[in-house]
Image 1 (cartoon, rainbow, N blue to C red):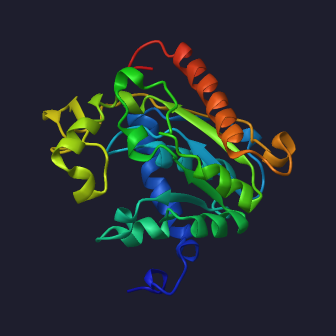
Image 2: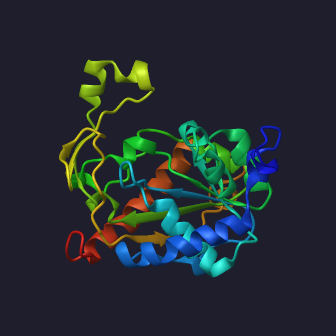
Length: 269
């Protein structure tokens, strides 16, 4: 076990800029070639801590974070870490150290607050798996499944919310249904702490209920980073969480609608 893997060291202190830079160097040509990734709007990104709130896409293989990170580090360098609030499952097994050292931290309020107050950029997907497995025919709908905790996180840390929307991730295969009814019928929620059992159709296995995992198709993925939302300035010193959440989702939906209007063909972009 290396020093950075020690459980006594806080998640944000495990970030390794050198390893992250090497990993980005490997991923950059793949993401920009296979997915023809584009990230727009970084010129308006605020200094200091910021909470990036995104829609989650791509099922088992979401490319949101790798694409954002590659472009963010390319523009701003590695002195400002990008942290991603992640499910505990990423923090177990043989790849746990890699995830920790490249900015993935356990999704809890304490980790988020520490990362934001350190001046880091924290990425959160409020919709989680529910969002990542939304049906392809509803791919351009912002749906956090009622989750609003991200608003309180930003308020408590005193940082702006930076909305970011992406398109193309739900075209990497055909997502048919989240399978909430199937998960409930089979008791999946009790066993795996998941309220969904998604069904999709893709290459090379055809129909998949998570397993066997299909290979993502080379859909063009475009991300639009929106202007920061200063919560205190726009909503006062005692902001209403519901009002802020509604505003964030509204501006994200408008931006996603614009991306969809400019997209000429599925997969091709």
